[in-house]
Amino acid sequence: MAVKVRIPTPLQKLTNQNALVEIQAATVRELMEALEKNYPGIKERLCEPSGKIRRFVNVYLNEEDIRFLSQEDTSIKDGDEISIVPAIAGGR
Image 1 (cartoon, rainbow, N blue to C red):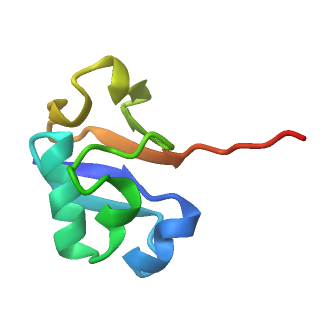
Image 2 (cartoon, rainbow, N blue to C red):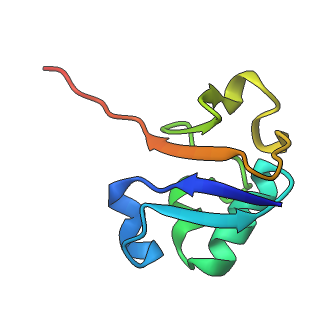
């Protein structure tokens, strides 16, 4: 299953400056493994050593936050779009 993955600007150095990559995976967990296989070093920036997505990284499946789905076990299918969005903190 090919899904499109939107890569945030700070991580594009790991994807050869590609803002959009296509990955074969059936779940978000498999997607993270496939990203790491194709773009070494990316998974450690997105996931804890346990494989759980870091709390400051938001992952959306077709604009729906996977935290409200099945998190890393969320199923994905051909044609879906995943957006990886790092949380931005600010204030005084």
